[in-house]
Each structure stands twice: as C-alpha cells, then as structure tokens.
Length: 246
Image (tube, rainbow, N blue to C red):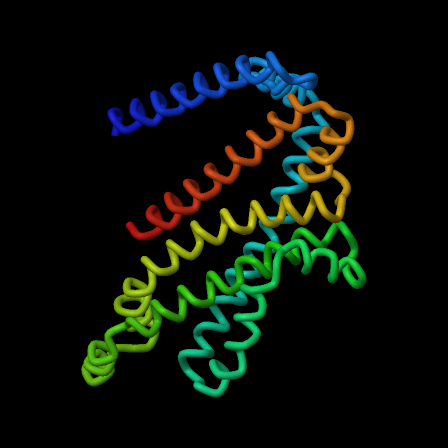
C-alpha cells in the first residue's frame, strides 16, 4: 500500500513538472500566458481562503449529490421491476437508449424551459446516472444463481434471508462498479450543466465567471478542484461500499 502511494505521488510530481516546463516553453510565444503550477496553487489558495468559495463547493455537492441519490434509487427500482416483469423491460428499453444518446448540453438547454436553473444540475446528474445504475443492477440481478435461490426456497429460507445471503452478494460487484462510475459521471455532467445554465452559487458559474474575466489561473485552479472532488467521491464511494461488505 505504501509503495502504491509513493508511485502515485511520483507520477503526479512528474506530470506537474511536465506542466511547468510546458507552460514555461509555451509562454515565450503567447500574449496571454498559460498558468504554471505555482500560479494555479496561488489562485487555489486565494479561492480557498474565502468562505463563499466553500459555500459554493457545498452547494454544488448538494445539488449533484441529490440527483445522484435519486438516480440510484430509481435505477435500482427500475432494474428490479425489469427483471421481474418482461413487459416493463420492453417498455423502458427505448427510454434508456434515448437518455444515453442525448448529449448533456442538449438536455440542459431543453429542460431550461421547464426547470429552474438551480434544479437543472440535479436533473442532469439524475439523468446521466440513471442508465448506469439501471443496467448494472439489472445485470447483477440476472447473474444471480436461480437454482441456488430455488434450493434455498425448498429448504424454507425466508425472502429476507435469500436477499441478504444470495441476491445481495451476487449483486454487490455490479452495484459497486455502477455507483463508482455513476458518481464520476454525475459530478462531471452536473458541473457541465452548472456552466451552461449559470446556476447561482455553483462551481460551474464560478468557472464561467473566471473565464469571462480572463483569470485563467482561477480557471485552472477551479478545474483542479473539480478533478480532485471527482476522484475523491469515487474513492469514498468504493471504500464505503467495501466497508459495508464486512
């Protein structure tokens, strides 16, 4: 584990050095310089020293997290119904294909007509994650050993016992992958929706404002914040689910 952390740290330092050298080389010919790692760190410290910045981060997390949790609940329920009723599976399949195919930008602009801008990132996060959760949970449920379930029923096991001892262990790897992947999708698509709809008190709106003000050191810093949160959320989700397995 320690060796892995050292390898990760060394890789990050390597790419930071590449970024610094690349920025120094490019800035010789550009009128508007590319921010270096030092410039980005200074902007990050400047942003992090304000209370409004952390309130903005929390607001974005709340919006996008709400959409993600709603998608987990709806996707799990929809997948369970699809496994149980073939008619529901047939009816829902075209809708899921449509949701996967439509670009986030198009959906954001469309729902802008009916949904307030503060709720659009929540809706977009929900819509992005729903097919991921649905398809993975459905696959996990279909991979459950039916003969094992039938044997448990013959021996008089209750439905709750079958759920906890057979169904959930079979479903867990699929659900873990869906949650980790879906959380990353929710965060990135939610921030993209915040940029498009200019939601108040959001990282996306802050990013757009920095871009318009030509504060590219802040643009880089905010992008770094978004990336770090994306990685952190996926890691926390995986560890939470693994911890619940014990």
